[in-house]
Image (cartoon, rainbow, N blue to C red; front, side):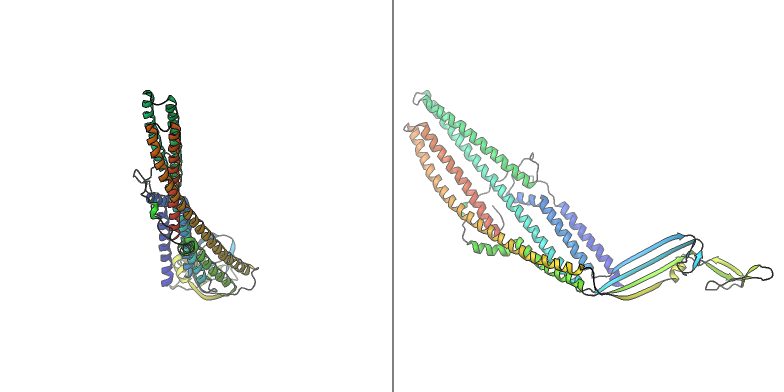
Length: 490
C-alpha cells in the first residue's frame, strides 16, 4: 500500500522537475550586454545563452532525462482506475445478478487494478542502464555543440580584431601620405620640387583612401558575421574590445601525438562516442530480454450497482428479508387472482452506496507470459540492436580518426603560422628601417616620390602581412590549447 501511495507522489515530483528544467531553458536567453565594447567572454556567454542549436541540443538532453525517469518508474506497479455509469432498455442482463430482465436499468461499475513486474528478462534494468548512458552521451553532445560554437565565435571575434588593426594600419598610411603631400606642396610652391612630385603623391593619397575604405568595409562585414553568430540584429551597434596579445609568449612546446592523447581524454565527442557504445550494449541486453518469460503480480478491486437491486420486500409484521426475491405471486385457481405470499410491499431502500459497499470483490494473482512465436518480432529487434551496437563502435572509431586529423591539421597550421609570423616580423623590421632611410632621402631631395611611394607601400604590405600572421598564429595556438581542455581566453 505504501508503494501504491508513493508512486503517484514521485511521479508528480518528477514532472515538476522536468517542467522546471524546461522553464530554465526558456529563461536562459539574455539581452545583449550594455557595455560599449564586448569582450570575447561576453560574446561567448551571450552566444551560448541564445544559440538555437545549443538550445535544441539542451532539449534533447531534457527529453532523454524524461526517458530515464520513465524507465526507472517502470519498476513500480502500474495502477489504473475505471468508473462507468449508464442506462439500458429492453431485455438484457442485470449486471449485478446476471439474470435476464426486461426493464430500464441504471448501472454503475467501479474498478481499480494494479500490476507489478516481477521478472521480465532483466529488460527494465538494462533499459535503465541504456538510458543512463544515453543521457550522459547527450550531455557530451551538448558540450560538443558548445565547443563548436565557442570556436566559431572566437574565430569571428579574432577576425574583427584583425580587421580593426588593418583599418588602423590603413589610416596611419593615409595620414602619413597626407602629411607628405602637404610638405611636397609647400616645396613645389617654393620651386624646390617639380609639379609631377605633387601629382604622384596626390594619387598615392587617393590610393590610400581607397585602401582605407576597403579595410573599413572588411571590418563591417566581419562585425556583421559576428552579429549573425550571436543572433543579434544587424542594425544593433556592436564593437569589440581589442585584447592585449603577445604572440611571442605563445610557444608550441608539445608534439602532435601528446596533444592528441590529451584531446582523447578531454574532448566531449570522444566521451559521447564511448557512452553510446555502452548504451548500445545495454540496448542489446534489453532486447534479448524479450525472448525470456515475463512474470508479473496482478491485483484488482471491483464493485458495481444496479437499479434493479434497489427494491427490497418488507412483509407484513415489520421484519425485512435480506435476499431477493422474498415474495412470490400466487394465483388462486378458482378466482384467478394473484396475491403476494407472504403479504407486504417493496421499497427502494438498497441504494447506490449500500450496493457499492456490499458488492466489492478483490482479486490477486500471478501471470506468466512465455514467448513462443511472435512473427520474428523479438529476434528482429535483437538483431537490429546488435547491428546498431556495431555501428556505434564504428562511429567511435570515425570520431577518433576525425579528432586525430583535426589535431594534426591544427598542429601543422600552428607551426606554419609561427614560422610565418617570425618571418613577417623580420620583414617589418627591415621595411621600417628602409622606409625611415627613404624618408630622409626624400626630404633631402635625393629620392623622388615614386621611390618614396614604393617604400611606403612595401612597409604597409609588410605590416598587413604581419598583422594577418600574428592573429592567425594566435588563433591556431589557441585551438591547440582548446584541444587540451584549456579555456579559450585572449
